[in-house]
Image 1 (spheres, rainbow, N blue to C red):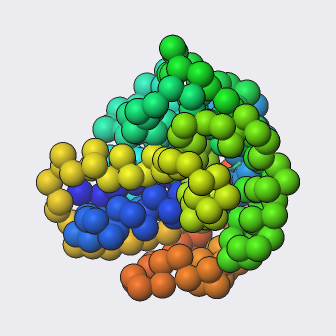
Image 2 (tube, protein in one colour):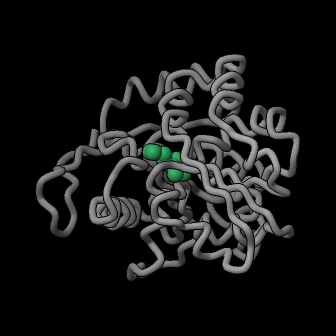
Length: 256
Ligand code: DGL
């Protein structure tokens, strides 16, 4: 079975890493749609196109199950017609909630669309957008002190008073330890629930992990190596050039 995951960059690797650790035998295909990053500042219509295209690319490379490794993209996927099994990261996060006052820290689009809030009717939901943290994590997720200071500066009392806080952006999952240290409350990472959901499938495959990148493969590869996110597994990289202008059918214009 080949599991396809997609995100705008390195964030979804937090999900991929957890899945590989628990299910090393599945085959994985991770699409970093860096050409269209960041997703969090995009409009609803553009996000829908991204989701449609990225799933199509993953399917054309043989994925037979999709894991949304991006909350922003997943925000618009609910009312889309996806023809293969699809695991929603937002639904997974919602499943984990046990308490009443819930904090959601996410991208601009996820907050604007109220993706978690809509699914948490009856709870008190405090949403906060931390879009600038996405590029900070992309540039240097290992600068713990800086990220800590950004969190302290950006998060307000209302968030500190929440019973549980959801990391509603996979880039934030990469630095979940820093969130836990600063927030001192129950911090939920939806990818933990995705792992549980995937346990329902037969773990078949040969353990191959392939990373597809839509722009600048070398800089993406260097970034993953520099941060040591997947240092203990064998990765195969491939660049997929997509045509951003033709918005119909498949838009892969070259594979390197
Ligand atoms: N990692 C993504 C998410 O979970 C999106 C970050 C971005 O590209 O803005 O929402």
